[in-house]
Image (cartoon, rainbow, N blue to C red; front, top):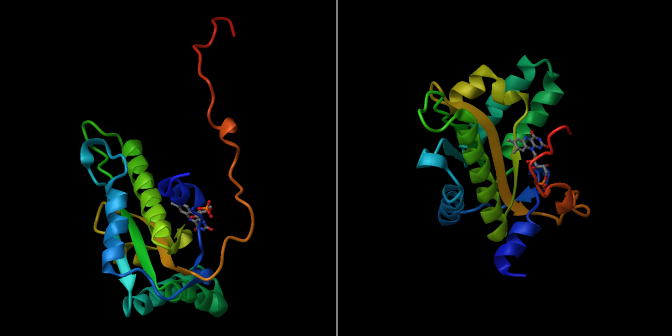
Length: 193
Ligand SMILES: Cc1cc2nc3c(=O)[nH]c(=O)nc-3n(C[C@H](O)[C@H](O)[C@H](O)COP(=O)(O)O)c2cc1C
């Protein structure tokens, strides 16, 4: 198997609990974004932005997360847990969608598909560079204060990619379905079926 395929087939998500320093540096992050930009993207709209949260900005995001947890009725324990989700990963990348609902050629679902491909390429590049990462969302993406802190009008906060050095290998075997469940020979349905 080629190294490229090994990186692709060996990728797995690593949650914030299992991410430690060091996080990726500027050049490594730029490579991840380059990989994201190589995903299929109809009309090259680049319908997304990645916003880096690192250093002191993590504490600012932690405050937003804790306030959102309190507003959602999670109490002080929930607030501490959610703040921890912002503080633990060495680097977090907020994923912001910029979907043009009125585009004459590219409908919204194609733009979302382009964003999905970008996230996938980003995470595969992170893995190939030796980092762990996980795409995360949760109800807090719909919290008004958090959304306003990350988005311009018309943008949507999809979630965050937590990034760092994995402190452990995946817990068990891959839960992915057999390719045969997904790859199906197509024929025109017979009339009367
Ligand atoms: C847009 C998006 C949001 C996600 N949000 C969460 C989340 O909030 N919590 C979570 O545990 N997994 C979430 N996931 C799934 C994980 O990122 C991951 O894909 C899943 O745990 C499967 O692990 P794997 O990537 O190792 O196959 C999300 C995935 C996507 C694409």
